[in-house]
Every structure is written in C-alpha cells, then in structure tokens.
Image 1 (cartoon, helix red, strand yellow):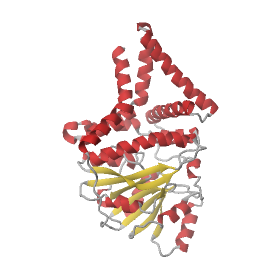
Image 2: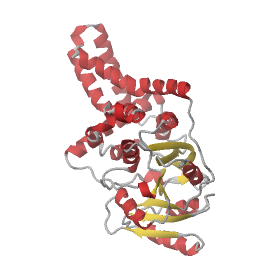
Image 3: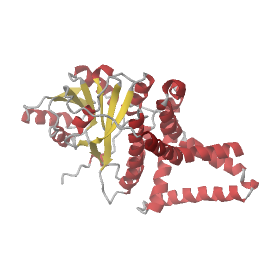
Image 4: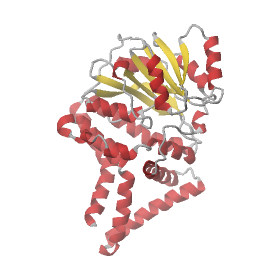
Length: 386
C-alpha cells in the first residue's frame, strides 16, 4: 500500500507542479521562438460551429467581418439548429452582400465534429479557421493564426482563448487561474517543438491536412495528437486571441468539463505509441506529462485516499495526511453548498468538480452515454454588448 500511496502523491504533485517547473527550466535553457510570416496570405475558410445559437450568432458574424484578414469566406456549420439561428444568419447575409457568407446545414443533429466535417467539404480555403459561435476574435486573430504556417510540417495552429473577466463570477476567476497556467505551458511546448493539445474556440489547419475523426472526438485533442504521430507539428500562437465567457455557475462549468472528458478512457488507452519517446521525442514527453497524467488525476486521488485509509495505523504522518485530505474535501463541500465566492472554498470546490468530471466522463464512456452532441451552457452565451 505504501508504494501505491507514494506513487499517487508523486503523480499528482508532478502533474500539477513538477511538470510546469520542468517546462520553465527547459524554456530557460532552450530559448526558442516560433517564426511568423505575415506575408503569407492564402484564401481562408472560416468555419463557425453553431447549434441553437440565436443569442450570439449575429454578434459572432459582426465580429468576424471586422477581421483585418483580407481573403476569406465564412461558413456557418449549422448542426440542425431548431431555433432562429438560420433565420438570423440569412438576414445578416442579405444585409451584407459584400461578404462571402453561407450557411451549411446538416441533415441530422450529430454534433460539432460532424457539422465541421460537412462544412469542410464545401470550403474553398487553403487554410481552414475554426471557431465557436460564442467565441469573439480579436481583429488580427486570423492574421496571427495564418502567420504561423511557415513550414510544411506545421499542421495545426491554435490561438489563445481568454475568459472574459467578471468579478461577480467566481467560476471565471477559477477558470482563468487554471487556464493562464495552461497557456504558459502550451507556449513553452510550442516554442520547443509541438503542443500536446489545443482548444476548440480558435484554431486553424491546412485543408490538405484535415482529417476525419470519430464524431464523439474533438479537434482540440485529436488534431495535435495526430500531427505528432505523423511527425508533424502543432503550434500555439498567443497573439491570436479569442474571448469567451466561462460558465456563470458551477453547474454550467461542471457540464462543460464532463463534456470535455467524454473520451477520457479512449484517450488514455488508444494510440499508445504516442508514449514512445524514442520515436516521437518531445511530443511523447509533452503528451505524457501534460495530457496522460492529467487524465489520470482523479484516479490517482482515489488510489491515494484508499491507500491512505489502509495506512492509518502506520504512523502519525499518514493520519495527518488523511486529515488534510478530508479537510480539503470539506472545504470543497462547503463551497458547493454555500456557493461561496471566497477562494478558500471556491478553489477546492472547483478542483473537486474537475476531478468528478473526469470520473463522470469515464462512467459515461463505460455505460455508452458519451455522445457527440451536448446541451450548451446558456450562461456562456450571455455576451456583454457594452
């Protein structure tokens, strides 16, 4: 039991603290920067995923046509919406005939990945830029994404998703604290070699490199993975910025996290060659530390508390450590029950929700409940017009 106990402690500590420290040291020693080529201006297809986005789709279209990028078309990948999304889009297209905008509606509501696949079939662009309806681009975001395609082995480029600040939403504070660290790690990985994962709000891929994946899968995990497995690179450009709202409450955030973990077991136990550091070098190192260990976090917590229970009679250290774990979970429970915005309660609660989301995602996979479609968090569509 002691071996399980200490392996669990090490795995959790290394995933959250040890790996970031390792990357920061590597960054200081290697000191690489990604190149940019602002003269490269291919025709771009901007594909906007939309399912029942009547609250935000007009604002999204207004946002996109404000881009400084000169050559593009816009395709709304409509996943069989049953609200006013298409009506609003068609009205916008009629009122803006000078822009190349079209709606591509799939026959069946099969999820984001399917809608994107069908939109790619009609896309004319050399480079495909993907976005969500509730993610607002900075004006130069597309210029920045495209500028990173400086070599043929660069297959995927993602931008920086920033969560809108709202002092009244503790979820935004917690998400930004986690996400800011995530982006720092991603930047270092990108500068050294290639990233382990992207994000679904702002990213680009050359059309010739676009692949079709299982419909339950997401591009932000699969595209960097398969780029690495094919000895290509996936990069992160922090200057390509999109802004989005995090869930306004823990319920919305939890739903979003469970959706993100809907393929957690598949991601853990397939494509095991990704861990072959002798063949894939930096990619394997980054992917194991940044993704595989993260996917295992909740399970290491389970092993830690079970092994700790068996070791309670083996010394004061094990009893104190167990009490510290219990205290952490009590703080998280108080945070959930009281909906307190105090960091001492909210951060433990937020962390525990992330761990529960991993377990929930795994359970959904085992029971066959994982699906390509989902109910969006409405609070992430509350775009501030001011």
